[in-house]
Amino acid sequence: MSPEPGGAGLPRDETDGYLGLPAHAAEQRARDRGWTTVRVVPPDAVITMEYRAGRLNLAVRDDRVVRCWQG
Image (cartoon, rainbow, N blue to C red):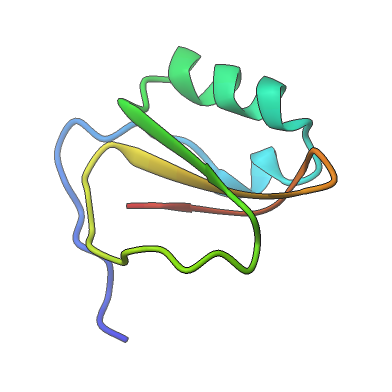
């Protein structure tokens, strides 16, 4: 897989900090930190993989974030 494109103006945020958080708290934290789009999906969801600057993806199982990535 090719490296993720970077972008000026993206939030400087460590995605590992979202792991284990309740979904609603993680979503609110992401918005407070400047993510323009927050996508919450089940861990096994089939999703589009196009990169979108400013989007944070949260994979959630049993109301807890189990994976987090940008784009």
